[in-house]
Image (tube, rainbow, N blue to C red; front, top):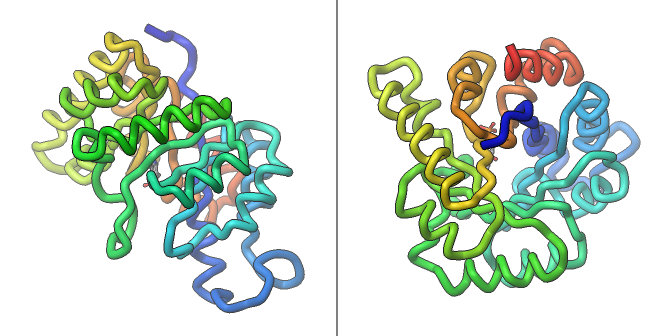
Length: 251
Ligand code: PXP
């Protein structure tokens, strides 16, 4: 089990959500007076200690645009983690982009954000082929899954080196008695993942409060955090927001 400090991937999708709220139909999405620029925010997050930058290029392009991802690929100095649906179009995009990591996520047009984990057992051959294609291109894959035995065992069979445990159910239950079993579910899943030889990340709904418990889950490699950091950044600036999250991940 890893005893290194947990890494922080900063998800900057919501910088683009804010930009798109005003500039959805603008011909260019960067430069000039069009703010905020997700790439500038990513670079500032890196300066404050982010270990990687995560973006989700959704099919409906509701926040991040292809141009953002291409600029990130050129500019960032850490590692790019592309969250993507398991579709031919996204696989082609990832092969051309060559991010260091690709996290396969379910996608549903009507959801506000990614709601459940990837149904690995329901689409084994598609997931297996996607993992194999991306791996052959030197891209390390992760599967975003619910923290249960079945999903972990299926993920291990797909030969993906990483999984990302969906922490949303725990985050939603945080102020209720259900938080205790949800945290236990995450602990068990992280332990099983490691026994199965997977490197275990986690993400979704992690904030400045629940990080106190999330960080105690043994052996987590990296957390992907977006909404809480971008929200805090409105008050403090992104560099302070990232520094504070890193501090809480350690202390
Ligand atoms: N990990 C995955 C796979 C996600 O889809 C998301 C949401 O885009 C996150 C992490 C970050 O979630 P949040 O914005 O709630 O921190």
